[in-house]
Length: 290
Image (cartoon, rainbow, N blue to C red; front, side, top):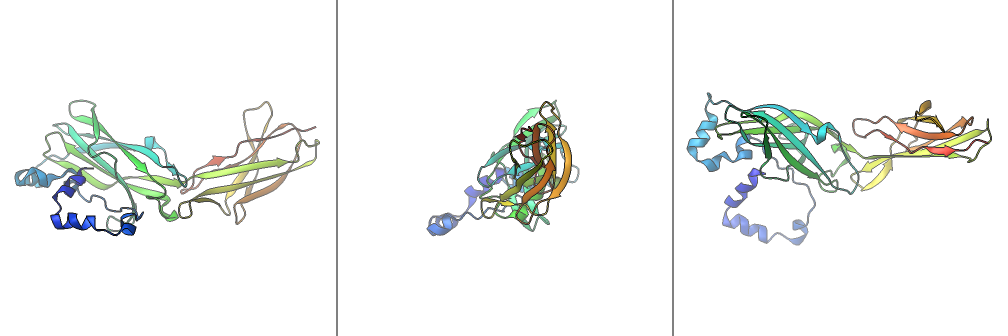
């Protein structure tokens, strides 16, 4: 991101102090929650001199117009316990002189002064593609590490999206920390087992399973308690599942219920999802009915 350029301006004393940080502190995995708070910080207007800086502040300067921001292709961002995920954010903006750069970030918190989660772009400059003479769509990528960026489970849910754009002639910028929102979720898993197999027609099947989701604090998957889950069935030669009943997970995320066996087919559990956890369906367990 562009604010990295400001690092070069730190004093010699500060730079020296960075070299003598104790090893334990240097290896600290505490996430960096610092993020830009203005367009001037993002695009580095101070480096352009006083004349440029004053032009940015002029009341009659035309700001770029941000018309569209797409996060992760419009899909929720879902992460497990270990694997990093790279997503993209595209910003479409326009200005009479065109658009030369754009910026976005994701942050979690009650307001800009109380940020407890932040993800900034991998690139210092966005890759902008012209739509026409005045409009461009600019793309940035973000690599999210659940063991670094998602250090507590309360970060699951709604995040804010910052969006900014720089005019083609660098005379003005648009910037907002509240352009839109995106959801960051804890990856879910769901299992099923129908028994006995095979089973006589009309006999009772016992269907067990478990709903779990990523715990970003322990790096393990834990049961998701008291959640409504559908038991579904589809006949052997059908492509459609039908809901048989809805039950709730136990305090440890386990599932158990019974059903009558009538024809060959597949049994599964299906979870609709919540704001913090994505929907998931178990792979169907085939039962041969004799």
